[in-house]
Length: 131
Image (cartoon, rainbow, N blue to C red):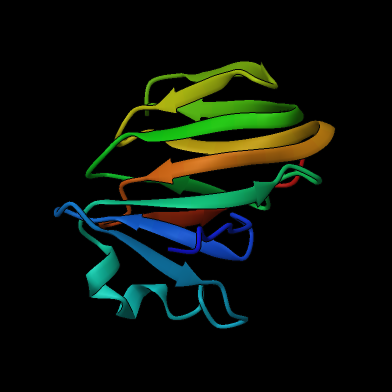
């Protein structure tokens, strides 16, 4: 057996409903075609994310919680549950759990990296208004 080592920015993990771990190479068209990948809608997708730069959108996962582990740097998350908007600063090696149905976005404080564990079914986005 030869152990496989992967960069989470280049190969995502799909933790489906079974015992296997799926490896999902990230291509230039991965995110553009994600809505057509019904095989990725069950279970969780584990992705790498640069925290350099503010997000230009709000994101919401209606079917499951999202876990964002900041592995380097620091960022500020904004969470909108429909009644109020809360902020949380997350610094490596901390993480935040974004409850299902909560709109969220992120601002860079100190560029770094995060590991994101998402229940993707029904994920939606909306534009982020400029300040």
